[in-house]
Every structure is written in C-alpha cells, then in structure tokens.
Length: 236
Length: 236
Image (cartoon, rainbow over the protein chains, first blue to last red):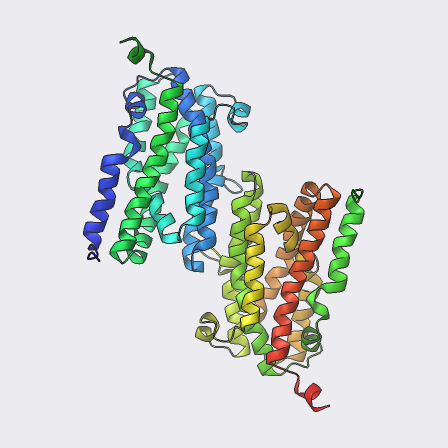
C-alpha cells in the first residue's frame, strides 16, 4: 500500500496531468490558436463542441444527485444555472449557440446536431456516463480540467479577435463568462477532491479521472482532425 | 391495444388515484388532523418525514439529469432550489429542521436520522430509485401527489395551530411555502405528463407511477403506526 501524497504533491500531480494531456496540445487545437483553421474547420469545432457544452448540465445534475449534503448542492447547482441560464440570464448553452451564429452556423443546424461526429458523441456520452456511475468525488475530479481552462480561454478570446476577424465579436460572450466561472468551479472542485480523496488509492483514482477527462476532450479533436483534415498537411 | 384516454379522462384518473390512495386517508394521518397524536407521535412523524424531505432534491436532480432540454431544466431546477435554498433563502430542508425544533426535536437528532425507521428508509429509497431508473415522464408522473398536497397542507397549518398549540408557530413556515410552490410544480408536472404520455400504455404507466408514489407516502405512515401505536386503540 503506497503512502498518501500530501495535498501539495497531489495537486501538483493533478496539474501535471493537464501539462501533459490537456487538449491545448492537440494539433487541431494548436492550429486553431495559430490562426490556421479554415472557416469550415473552425465551424466544425464549434458545432461539435456544442455536443459537449449541452451535456455539461446533464453531468452536473448527475453529480448533484450524488452530493451528500445540501451545502455542497447549493454550491454545485450554480454550474447548472451557469449553463442553462435562469430568467433574465441566457446561460452558456445559449451563448454557445450564439457563438455558432457568429461563425456562420445557423441556430437550427447547431440544435439538430447534424454536424456532430459519431466519435464526438461517443466521447461525450462516455464522460456523462462516467459522472453517472463513478463515486461523486471521482466524478468531481474529472471536472478539474477547469484548472487549466482559464489560461486557455483567455488566450482564445485574443486568438479569435485577432486571427479570425471574420468571427462576429458578440460570439465571444461564452468565453468571457467562463473566465470568472471556471476558477470558482475549480476552487470548489479542488476543495472537494482534496477533502474526499484521502487515501493513495483514491488520489490515484482522481488522477485517472482527470486523465480520462483529458482523453474525452482529446478524442473530440481527433474526430475533427480526421473529418476536417488540414489540406496543407495532406499536400506536403 | 386500448384507446388512449382524452386529457380530461387521463387527468380525472390521475385525480382518482389521489382520491383513493393519497396518504390523508391513512389512520395515522387522520389522527394527526383530528388532533389526536401525542407529542411523541407528532415528533416521530416530523423526524421520519425528514428523510423524505431531504431526498426530494436528490430525486429532482436525477430527473433534472434526464430532462431533454434546457427549457425543461430551467423550470425543474426551481424545485431543487426550493428545498436546498440559495444565498439569502434557507429552503425547505432547513425549514423542516426548524419544524423539528418547533416540535421539540433538537437539530442534531434530526440531522443524524436516529429516529428514522428502517421501513421509512426503504420506502423513500425506493422512490429515489424509481426516479433514477424510470423514463423521465414516468418519474415526473410520480411527483403528481403535488396535485393533492395544497388542500392538505393548508388544512395542516390550521390543524397544527389549533389542535397542537404547543407547536411553536415559526415551525409552520415549510407548509406556508408549499402553498404556492406545490401548485406551480403540479402545473408543470401535469403539463409534462399530458404532453409526453400520449399512448394508453404510457398513460397507464403514469397512473401506476402516481399509485406507487402514494404507496411510498402510505408506507411511511404504516411504519409510524406500527412503531408509535395509538395507546387508546391498544386499550379498547
């Protein structure tokens, strides 16, 4: 039986998962942030990523149902509200639909999921089922890609503004909201994982959960790279 | 294959389930509303019913995770907020804890569930699992005891005020909140069930779901009646 990691060591190992496997290192994502995606490739990313976005409140409701106390639920429910919206706020799913419109995807094409690739569906459904079936601290651990999101998202706003000037600026609202939502969410997530994963075995399961989540995001981009190949790469 | 019922007929049949099987007809409940429960019996009801109350947001989160659209979730989530509360509002679970204090159950005795009878736990857990496992329109149908709740709850406020004057009046806040929450919830529930249960088979499953839910509430009172028998009945 291996000794448990200190909280510092544990958190460093969680961060290392992101440093090695977060989807910012995927070639499709690298191309996006270098301004090299064609409009069709960027639209494909937005339309496919929508399937991930729309399932976020589903996986969060599954985790909500498992949280052991009213206090934890009162904090976690904000994630669902952030994405679904409430009266007077539209929420992240609607903001993503508007991002779609800003890149030229009609609302109905986004909502009917006609552009969603099978492998994207499989990966996202696997994530939802992971949250349905795993113990709640491990499901929470899988959400810790939020640790790495704010840096990437703040870069992405600049990337879209400067390298894809044809994207209408009102489409970027989703990313702006996430700049303050993601750090709050990852703080809560880290708090839960540090408190609940107290044996080495649980700590290792949390690491594996975060790796799994990185695989989900990576698989989404693999599917896009295969369906929307880089023409230059094919020619060289 | 039997013909589907009209919405009027379907709703009438749902109401009939309540007329026949809602827990207001259980002897323990009848005694409560006749002012005949001893303080110990009333306290037992409050402490055991708490296990039902605390599981309401759990079953509602399970249903939330299955609802097919953001629009439905935006309405349904209010149920969870009503019970868990948010910043600035305490919510129904805390209100029930205060009802406990108002009848003389210390907060810690309520929260540690020491008074919760095994059969109460089984019945409530069965309800949560029903909502976890059944299709969402059928899970929603099981919530339609809300159709019958407002009448009973408004009577209960008067009953507690007049027949149990030793109950501190601030304990009744839970019931006052339900007077406007339950009709809003049952309106939404009826709307969903009428829209989604369109074949006779689905309509019959909805009826069965509501009967099942009445059985859950009934079993809770059976357990109480057995554990806290009416002394008069034993003597006669």
